[in-house]
Image (tube, rainbow, N blue to C red):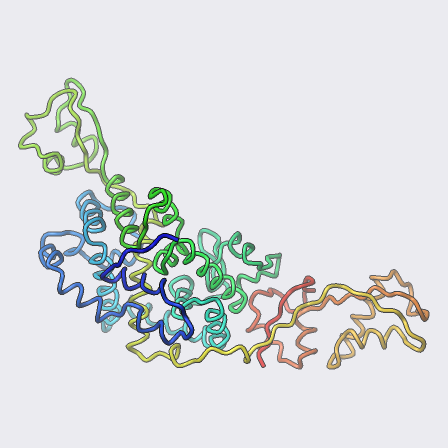
Length: 451
């Protein structure tokens, strides 16, 4: 792992976490950047104060950056690119501040929807939170990173992104399988809050080990672009600030086109061709007037660009998360009051099929009752008899002492509800990864039981 240089500013404060051993998650909380610190950074920045009136990125309508703008005009693209290269802390800090201000707007429908989504997400999370905090602690991951599930999905188990990411932590199938989750028709463990949190915590820990700090780990969790940045650096030192510099340079290249002037071409014709005002071309190339250009000379043309959705989203991913942290802290949210615990839940694993040697006096019904579970109903015992007969190709119920019977442990969620004397609705709530209550679950399938 490359030695990280000492950093200052909002991105540096996130990187501090990478050097911490985490015996107690309470030690992590004060190290995470908070809004007061971010706000002070913004106000103390001479660069920001100087640009507030001149810079279209900072003086424009910030709310457009909360959506997914389909394009930037050349002036906006150059402005954002310049700031990402020169002062990424200012970009991130400003977006954090503006997001919090937007969230606090009175009588604004979009702000109210944002607050409602956040409240619903926290409410969905609370029944699982002690166990999830325990899982993140066991993996050495700051418990606040659980909150990534809110901007990802509002903690909705059935959420599916346009890229196919699923569940509360929005796991792609290849990531889910990498961390041992089972994905079958009607049974997708990436949709279970507990099981997916294990995969998410493991993935974040591995990403932190790969990139060297939590900031880059978080950004890679959202997008592959940090890998492009790491490869471009060819083993040299990397940092969160450096990554945003990389995004700025990439945006700058997208917002410019290099051309060579052909004989007979005029600057007016070139401006019309690219849809770029003549004044912008002159300014970008340091040309006093159009008569100065000559055939064969090179020009840089600022162009309107279509911003790739993942590019825009990745710039906003960190501000969204940091704003969310401060909003929840300021509200004294229940998230911070719940302690990690591994005692509130139990996992029932559907066993592999087995065998049973028939003893003298045993009947098919008696054996079926043993393997159905002590709380099983008459109906469940009948199902087990049918499965045992089918597995052993029995035409009736006659069995003999010493006979080796194949035992099918196949069960549905309804069967597990009987075994644990659980309300089926409550069990379904805890197991959104199981689509149908009556469907037979595969061997090794996990059912979460709330004690």
